[in-house]
Amino acid sequence: MTVSAVASTTTAGLYTAPTAPAPKQTMDSQVFMSLLVTQLRNQDPSSPMDTNQMISQTTQLAMMEKMTELSTTSTEDFSLQMRIAATAIVGKQVSYLGKDGTPVTGTATSVSFAGSVPQVTVGGVDVALDLISGISTTSA
Image (tube, rainbow, N blue to C red; front, side):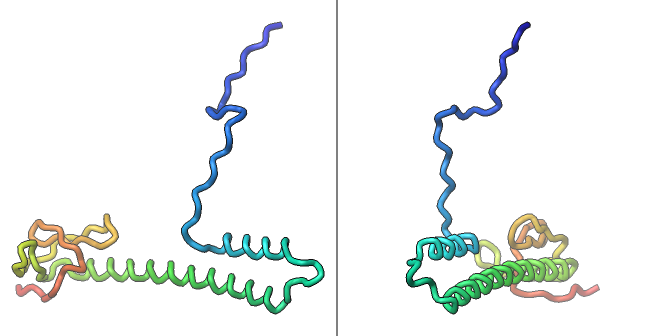
């Protein structure tokens, strides 16, 4: 009976140390909960943690999570408002300051949402929405 060799599916050796995760730069709910559990685990049994303090900390955790959600929702809302504003000016006469500082006026022909700030095409030039200083209707 012949036995075939088994190929290794991983490139790490048997004795290589696992890579440590990169340290977090922000406090999130996971870090907060880890601190609370560590605090409970290392408390003095003869003087346990006050339940009011524990409830206060869990309330702070819930508030932090809701504030994070609110911040995310606010950012998404602002992004949506910029997109709506950019599409509303297509076909209208817009003004902005050119790279040399002179005022430029032209008709907005299209909008691109590729970046974080919508880009409005005016006379073949892409202009960031926040650089547009005036909008007027085109005269027919």
